[in-house]
Length: 147
Image (cartoon, rainbow, N blue to C red):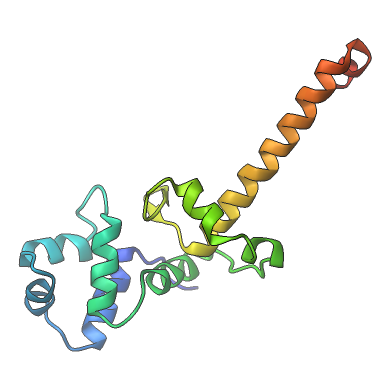
């Protein structure tokens, strides 16, 4: 059984695979050695998504790849997504995010594919809610469905 990894674990592995010390990574990012230590040892209560992007770039990878490794080690299935989710226009997702660069859930930053799922879920929930409201507005005979 695979052991569960955190973002810090994956960053440490990537850094070590590149033969870069914590001090060298800190210098590249313009942060303290302590900041890198805290990240790798999960000492930060909140993880800055922008820092994840900077770290990923410094380690020649992407934040999505880091999150994929974390999710994979935690047995989060990478299900084949239907084309409905993959074909969501990026403009709709950007509007949904309302200027945020990333979303997180339970302390983990969501990958682009996960954000597409969240968006699709909310759109579907909104459609169901509107249909229920339309039925309620039509009259008492439809209200029996909701009692």
